[in-house]
Length: 112
View 1 (spheres, rainbow, N blue to C red):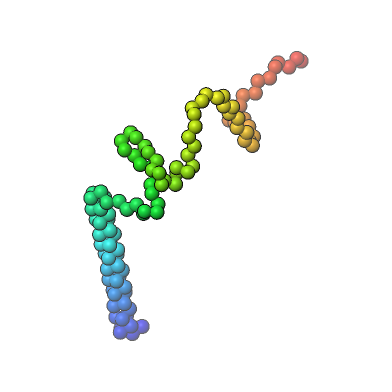
View 2: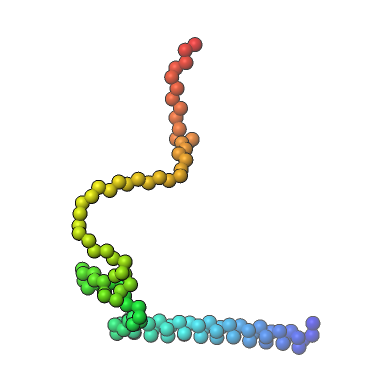
């Protein structure tokens, strides 16, 4: 290989490395700037809520309310409180097997 080819490849690697370093620095600065803007917006109390998509619930201390235009409101049912028995049954396909490491076989004495 000629001396100029080695020199050219060495320069190409150096430029590629420098470009990669600059790219990583740019990504880091961009992410840091985005985070700085997001934190300053949160500290100012600015939160975007689209007008056509109101929140499902609003929390005010211990109180939770459902706004009138909330999509959750159409799914709620309001009715009288009543006691009624509830029968719980759960049927699942399963196989019960004994753990051989914890199995003790107990047999009656065998008459001789």
